[in-house]
Length: 167
Image (cartoon, rainbow, N blue to C red; front, side, top):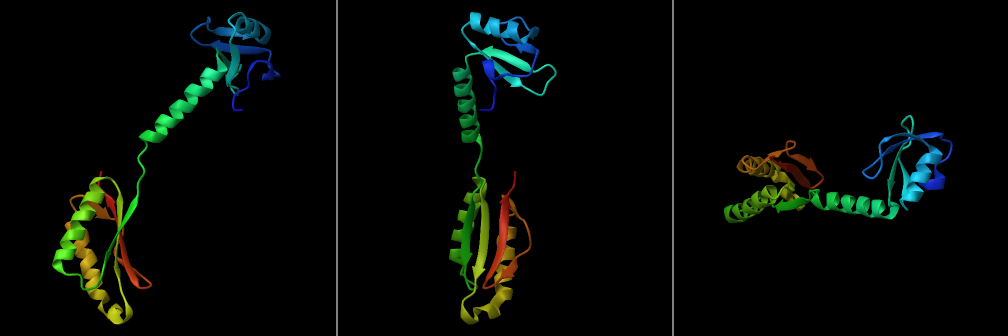
């Protein structure tokens, strides 16, 4: 339980009361509990590290519900960045290239990162210059909507470049 309530608040003689339904100020712990009991609400410790500790007189269950709802809203509003992959062969022809370029532009406009790579099979590793040229051209063509995080680099049989969306 993140907040101490009512009798769980121990070791304090005074508390600072804040809230809508109470006159703000410093009260003894007993006075604060008495005020809370009169209103049939809970005395909730909001800031235990303050001097004196800050307490609020509220309905604790309602407080927890609102807190949970606020966290849920923040989670919904946060943007999740996905990494979309686009795969090329070392000798990808023009139509395929344009098709994949269009998809990459859409991904970047949506705010996702694009991981683009040239996959070398068997002896096609001999054409790694072609793969590097292809990825460099890809980065240049996407310069309006995104920017490469690093130069293309060879990892095993793949030459990879990550492209992040522009703000």
